[in-house]
Length: 68
Image 1: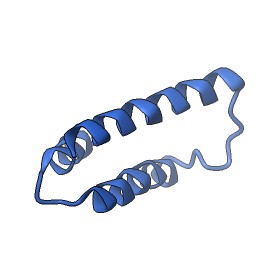
Image 2: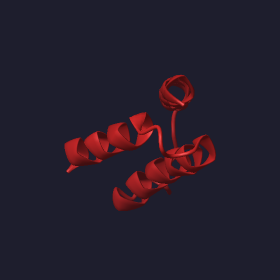
Image 3: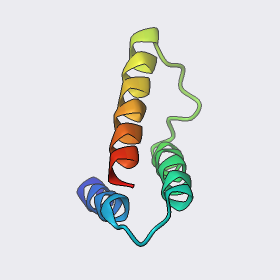
Image 4: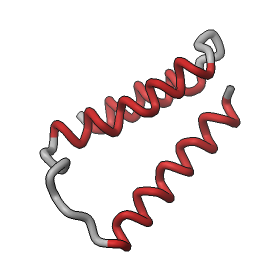
């Protein structure tokens, strides 16, 4: 299931017919769906984990900005 989601995200990210604001809204939506599905919303995070999540978000944003 995770591989299907990643493939879907890659197709949306690279599609040129979708505007940047729409891609950005989808980018913000996907992590929240993942967290809700896996009940990670209520867990506390360690500082190192928060840094890794932030690094991943930055990587996704860089890819999104380069493909737009």
